[in-house]
Amino acid sequence: MAKKILGYVYLIWKCAFCGTENPGPIKSCTSCGAPQPADVQFEKVDQEKFEFIKDEALIRMAKTGPDKHCPYCGTRNLATDNLCKKCGSDISIDAEVRTSGEKIEDRDKTPVNPTTQPKQLSKGCLILLILAFLIACVVGGIFIFQMLSTETTNATVEAVGWERTVLVEGYTTVRGRTWYDELPAGATLVSCSTEYRYTSDQPQANATEVCGEPYTVDTGTGIGEVRQDCEYRVYDDYCEYEGMAWTVIDTLTLSGYDLQPRWPNTTLSSTERYGQQTETYTIVFNADGKQLTYNTNSLDLFSQAAVGSEWELEVNQLGAITSVQPSR
Image (cartoon, rainbow, N blue to C red; front, side):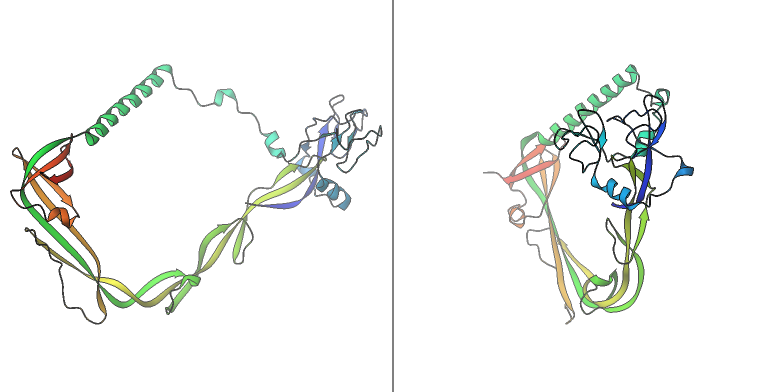
């Protein structure tokens, strides 16, 4: 999401020695003079006192970065200071830089009462869940084993069958809907309407800005940066059109019970053509009086399945054929 800066506000800090509330940019307590501690926690002002800072100098200070604390006297200095303004020590290297970037509102959240925490499962329920999980694993393992474990079975071809299908396509006028910039070449526009297309993190043309609740970020200077997380719902022209395209107008199917499969055909006009073709071959085996059926798309395999021929089958524990080949 895009982060939108609404402005800057004063934060406050409470003196650890006398409890006085002080404006965030003030470096020492206005009551007892104690320096602002390095680990001070800034807070938001009361809602009725809330107003955006108009002083450009203070706004620039907030943008320069978090304050630095002198390691020698503890005085708080601006991010741009190289010498402590109180004791004159060099603070360009060893100074402690205040943490920044945290949401003030996150600090103010009331801790969850332990009594409202979700109840933990009892030991008995936990044991039952573990047992149920183990049983499910065992059952699943048995099923997988039965699927993968096979044995070789000799069988005779008892019957065969085949089915072939051909789609017939016609070049006809069709209606469709798509975005304006994706209209097919040569299409005739019928009508358009403005509809939601996608959400962007950045401002876009024809977009509606949708923002969350404002929140305050600690800049580490005693001044808070008020932000909003925003996204942009982009709208565009979604259109109905007419155009010429190849579409399915008929399905031809031919089947038989021999080893000579054929494709169905018909007389086509100048605006028709054959489309997708599919073929399915079925071999019925007899294995010691038990009938087993095997489907394949391989014409080469099917053409070898003369009725009465001997075959070797791989059959899993569930009774399904996994592979076949003619006996040697």
